[in-house]
Image 1 (cartoon, rainbow over the protein chains, first blue to last red):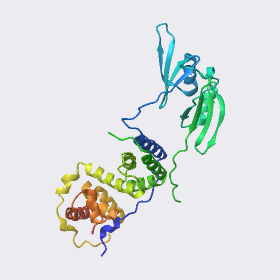
Image 2 (cartoon, chains in turn yellow, brown):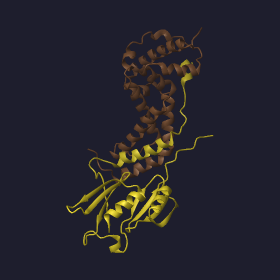
Image 3 (cartoon, rainbow over the protein chains, first blue to last red):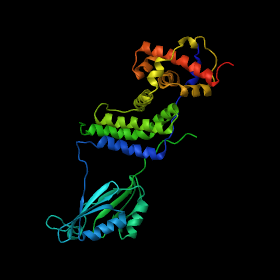
Image 4 (cartoon, rainbow over the protein chains, first blue to last red):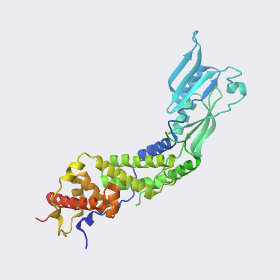
Length: 172
Length: 174
């Protein structure tokens, strides 16, 4: 015997949520899995440069560095600075051998900084306009769209836009 | 205290990330169709996948599949409806169970869906699980955390309330 309420029966076809939501949730899942209260809370690399003031000016104009802290000794000399690029926090210190050696002292950078940005082409264009050097042009790779820039202080910046998580295509 | 992610848990999490592009539209589609509200569907879908990430991290599960996600999503929807403050009071006041006896007319699907949306949450939950999702009564009982008999009784009252609401909306005999 059929039940009149059987008319309610409905399957639930797959439906794509808004792309913004797809990306945000993918990132939240990653944080939920890896970010834990009893683990390291942040990492802040410190770039050694020949001129701290010039470096933070450059990072502000080339990359959009904000929230800049300057640490001075009594005579006004800046000995350390820290800035933020979105979720990335980074320090800048002057040369102080044998502890702090800049790429210029070593003849090259030993640690490239890898930035993931939403629009690598726009990011690289702004940096180049501010004086960054193209080491490897931005191009498409299996891991995303990526390139490498050199700053005037000898540090290398790998800039990438990772592939976005794509969702299943709607059926026609 | 959470435990650090182990390498096998990380491997399982990577598999969840591979599943994500296919499973998310399934979960979201289910939730959106059932609750009708895209924002609520997003919230519940997010809760579902975040719980999956935590469960893998804490070692509660070692493999997340689409059916596992759908079951969690259904629980999230039921929990959401249960939190609705109207749920308990209407459950107890819905008498007239015999109203549905002998009701064998053919219902208009559109009006029936509209009727379902007007019902108090507890009744909407059992009717959605039983009729829209086509779950056996035992599984409905499991989802709402009631005994089989209590669930059967609740279904009878919900059907009666449904019929009254259906007639009131204009789907019944004139």
